[in-house]
Length: 197
Image (cartoon, rainbow, N blue to C red; front, side, top):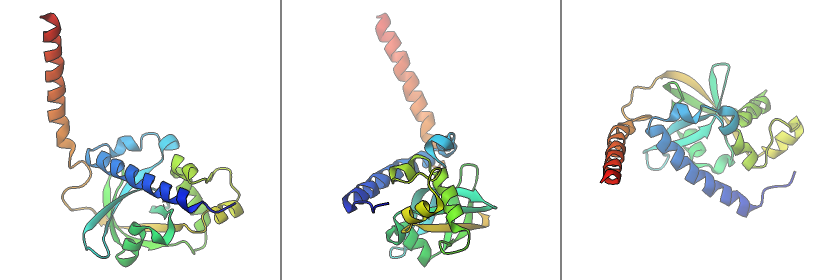
């Protein structure tokens, strides 16, 4: 398997960065469960909340994940240059927004541990189209092919440490649905009145 052209890789990074902003907004609007409604088609998503290693500010990164033996696994597809990966290596205390609950955890790189390739495969299967966009078919590739294709990836395990107690987070913008519904109803009523006159 040949390496990805740097221009294509940069295009993918920019595309995922834009897509991640959209995904974060969907979580904040309370649609996290809906985003995970068809994992076979669209993948399994969570938001990992981490601390910026330079700024000290909270950072939010939507990532694909798989739950394996009670732990959560995700991959840094762009490897050690990924900002979120560098942040969690500097401060492994993270918060996870999962479809049904939010909790805190301790993250660690387990790329070089025994059995990592099989877990990497499960995360990539759970990513659905995202893996294929990077040219990886985890369902069809042999172990050797997958190891070569993901040689720059990092596998991250997050272990549960407690329930999330912070304010804000998933659904913090869900209040907009009420006013938007009222506006839509008002527009519909106004449109019907206009047609009658």
